[in-house]
Length: 77
Image (tube, rainbow, N blue to C red; front, side):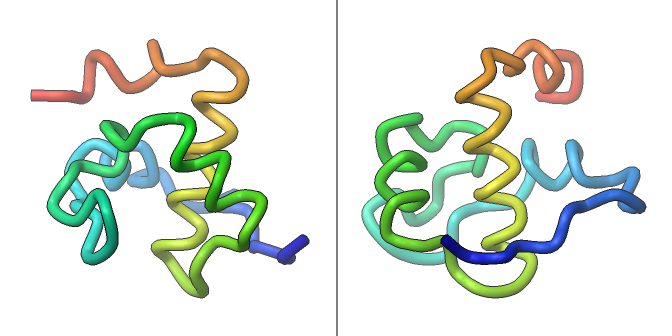
């Protein structure tokens, strides 16, 4: 399992999840919060990418896994 740094001091994290698009792969062009849970589960088991994208995808995985999508609803335009 990867050691991905926690986004403890980034207040814009949730905004990034509802605005940033996946840059490659099967869901290229999808907003990160719209990537299906099964794909995030697959990425979790195969390893998230390095850097900010990996941290955001890992965070989105945890949000979906724990049923916390409501946190993003008011941020989506």
